[in-house]
Amino acid sequence: MPWTLWTELRRIAAWPLIRLTFWRHGIPWGRRWRIFGRPIIQRHRGSTIDLGNGLELRSSLRSNPLSPYHPVVLSTRSVQAEIVIGDDCGFTGTTLVADASIRIGNRVDTDFHPLTPEGRREDINAGTSRPIEIGDDVFIGMNSLLLKGVTVGDGSVVGAGSVVSRDVPPHTIVAGNPATVVKELT
Image 1 (cartoon, rainbow, N blue to C red):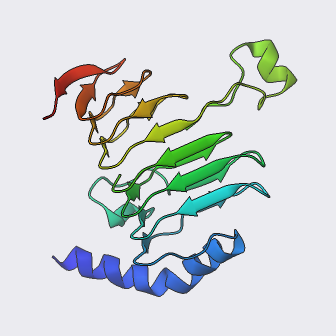
Image 2: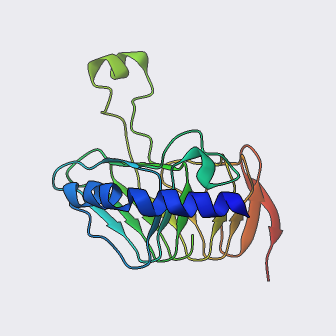
């Protein structure tokens, strides 16, 4: 397909600038990374962004048939924040913002604003945060929302557009708003 050739050529041409972006934010370059378009990285001094090997980030509009609305965003908002992504993960137009911790397993946000208007006026970043855990071999459908504190078990599937507000057991398909178990995988 001709579009894949042009996408690959653009990726190779942008490689030095993109690699410099990761270096500038103190993120070591991993093996087998394929980065399409420049992601937005906002790393709080002292926080951790640890990205596994085989990472694929798609930030450019033409890099994926899903046509991301915006670049991939990796943002840590406090010194104790961490984003840890396992090996062989791919993200298209994904936003990961950690005030506490986001851990994503191999082959696969915390919200941080106060709930009351008064609380937001006092300190917009003073809301509660809890880590999100995503196990190995998980598939998360497009435009899904994982709320703070949830764990998605190994081998699970989250249907597109789902709002996950509770833990997802391993080897389970969930979908909907709020996400409910649709099927158990064997």
